[in-house]
Image (cartoon, rainbow, N blue to C red):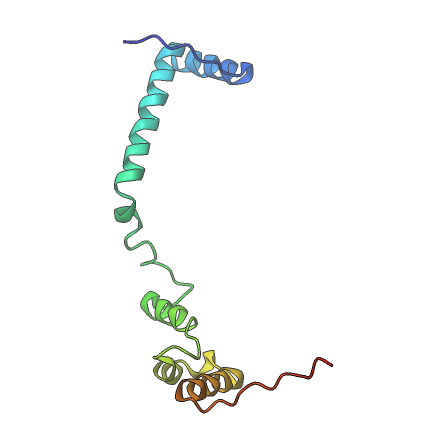
Amino acid sequence: MTRVLADIPADDLQWLDQRAAALGRSRAAMLREAVSTFRAQSQSENGDWLDRGFGLWKDRTDIGDAVEWQRRERASWTRPWDDDYEAVKAEFPDLFDAEDDRQRQVYLDMVAGRYPEPIYPDPA
């Protein structure tokens, strides 16, 4: 085993000594256990974060059906120039307003070459 020299604030060291005394252990044993626990947690956090997150929302009741909620959230990001604008608007009409429709028409006119040249004010 290797000996380590570490600077620890006085109040933390006092707490550690009190905790070790209450558990009937040495300061060194407490530090070894802390490092061992921290190491195990770090390895599990880095290794299985996807597994821990899978199904995290399955018991949520505040959002209704989680899949439908997710589809609606994704639909809210649809913009007038997206290829699936009409399909998404047909499924979630309340997410779109008249300005979205106006912007869609501007986009379609631009793509078709029907949009007029902009008229700039005379700088003089």
